[in-house]
Image 1 (cartoon, rainbow, N blue to C red):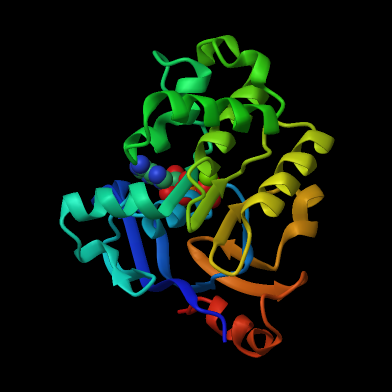
Image 2: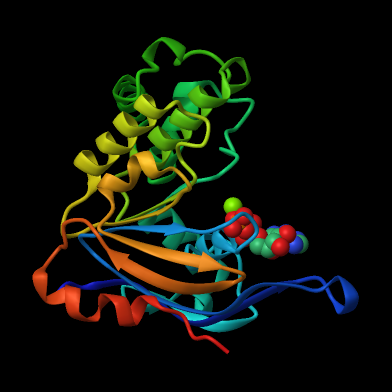
Length: 250
Ligand code: ADP
Ligand code: MG
């Protein structure tokens, strides 16, 4: 039986108060396993980014709990939570979040520096990862000199350089053309996915569906259904995957 990576139970998240209150997550339960690449698809505004933020320790839910490898992350101290994010999670933000005052190579090296890798070694590895995403010749430039698609590839290189147990990517191909998107996501899949890692991808891009182990659908703050399409980490999983993936309806 595959090990559980993330288990989220009855997550609710809202923004604002009174008239202005927006219910972004209306009771989402989700379980993901090591060895799989799970996609979450759904219309704009359905809560996908909010869900990714809640399961990765970025945004505290109003209700519900998130366990990552058995640790209840929203009960950690703020130091504990920061350490959890630093050591376990790679995150590709929808709007990249690159540091404007660092060079492209320094941006990619940040996760290694935070894990106390020696500077020169971290920068050398950053060059290697930039090479993998076709951007070695941009290494010394500030990210603002790069196109949107190039910045997106830098964000992906930064998220995978530390080989995180859990990689979360929010619309990682939105600024890439079809061939580049497929080749970058294919690279991430080959480079990272094994029985000790779990990758979660939010996307609208059906050109990268071929890499998915499982696709979950989200609508109006709820998970509404799942389909198994790709290779499973273990056959035993196929029987319960649909059941655990579907959020409660009210
Ligand atoms: P998606 O990623 O699927 O497009 P989001 O998770 O970004 O959806 O947003 C879900 C809902 O929550 C939307 O109605 C959005 O406007 C609202 N929302 C998201 N973030 C905030 C915020 N920081 N403040 C107020 N409303 C927000
Ligand atoms: Mg979003």
